[in-house]
Length: 466
Image (cartoon, rainbow, N blue to C red):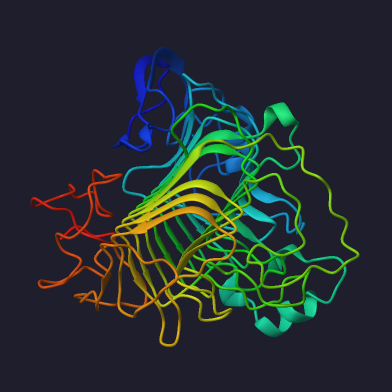
């Protein structure tokens, strides 16, 4: 393993894929940036000590909090095998809060050592909380305490005025709620991470901008929280700028079995537990929960938002979302979203939501998706939406909510339908109507496995290119 070095390198950050469509133009997350700078490399491992200097594997730190104290713009934190947990048992904060920012030309990277699998065991309010900007999280595993909790205890805790964080632990949170208006977090990439069994939300983005979540596994989250969480959620996007392009990118993720079993504290009813939810980019006030299926109690004070209008665009592409208690994918009071080449399967088992739908949203493009509702479930719905483009989607049961000219109503014919997802899950087999019938509009360069799209002359529908 390479020892600690201070050296100059050329780093080229490339964000997201470029997508071209005559109706929408060319989108990208942020212009490519190349710069020369010096950086430090820090090491953390299960065999380390915070009294070490953290400059080599042999002198690694023991805790991520120690690394967060010394890290600076452009630095890389390499995390080795070990179990990382909050030994203070103070039932309050996160395992690590990342509050120092990088720079546009010097991002801070938090990465698993090659070939190693460090585990962050979250038990407070969060596993990783990010309140700053220009960060990359790569290859980290965050595991919550669902296996040691019971629904009975969670329901009893929900009756208490003061919540116990043990039942509300989130996996990864990008949180701008307590930051000044000009210091909200932005430019964060979460990739190759596994976030599971957290009683709170899996990956949650609050009042932030320019966030990418890609190639992650997000599963078994939100079971015991009182706040109606989901597997992957963005809420109240806070505009960093008005540049064109994708500000939010959610691609090539496996999202399954996220659900809520404890009623939302505001309504006393079960809510959310979605696979992927983009939530509230408009500046309106409202009196309903994120899915418009319950009315808030009248004594809850509503405050007019001071958020700047979010004019960016979001991409949800090449994801598989299955067996979630809420929807597979949906938007609520959100604008400017492209939902392209996803596969959803048997969602809505707890709260009855449809598989994939916009809700009180506008300018939503839904193309090339495979959408398979659970038995008795519904494909989609339309509640006070505007400017919805729906076409080239494949679903097995007839629906008349949105009807695209090139929709196909047939069984998609999968090779395998496992309960716990892999990239091979829901791969269309020979003869599937998904193969070769997709549109080139808002074309994706690769599928969920990184395979080129299209492989043949015409691209497929769904997350997998056959």
